[in-house]
Length: 126
Image 1: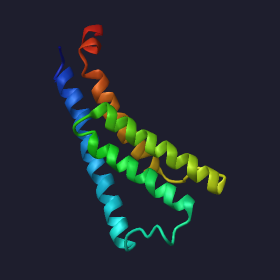
Image 2 (image 1 turned 90 degrees about the horizontal axis):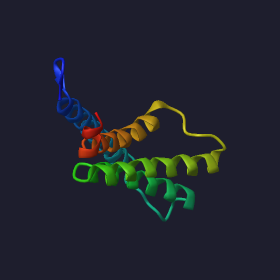
Image 3 (image 1 turned 120 degrees about the vertical axis):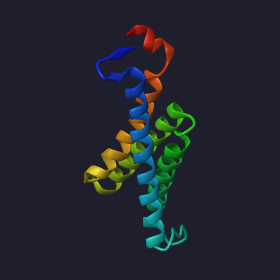
């Protein structure tokens, strides 16, 4: 389906690659933070901090898995961020501040969107 200068496939491919590049940036940033902080020592962390680190690792694993399985990986990334938000709210009484956490959730949502709009049933509906 061609509409103007951009085709439907080009738009879907752009969404997919934007999500992939953002995912690489997020995973790279998390790796840099872990290296800069000297790693994670679960023996010195509280159970709450351990769960938060686990939710970030789930999110990063989802972003990497989304390169192959967009729907599964995107859902895993969004679920990991939701878990992080819930855990942070339970500990501090407020949600995390800053745009970065929302951008990570958006990243997983872009993978889900790319998968859903690339299915045959979606194309037939247009």
